[in-house]
Length: 109
Image (cartoon, rainbow, N blue to C red; front, side, top):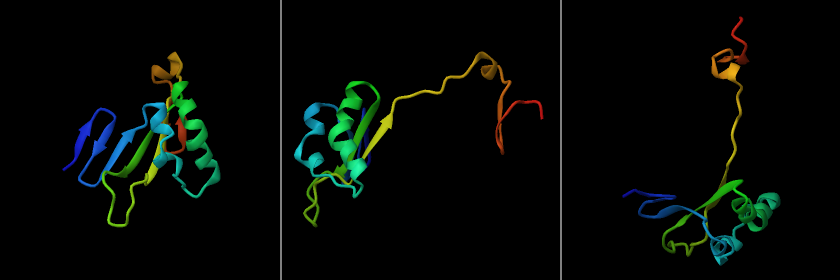
């Protein structure tokens, strides 16, 4: 059964949860995570917590709830959602620009 709580989703086998504290980021399960890409591993092991502290991103961990038959308990995936925005002008808000199949149009086609 799927359970949804603030900052986490859980079913019978897996959980997607936010890494909310410094110990969450530097626990054994996260430290042993290896996605096979050195740059991404470095980000999750060294930079993700700083990005959280500076409100740049929130990082989530997807992992089994219990040790699986294969003996796995470490994260299956880590994902960071960036905190950012797209700033639009008053003209854009008034509808002077619109999306077309070719991209952003100026409304004068």
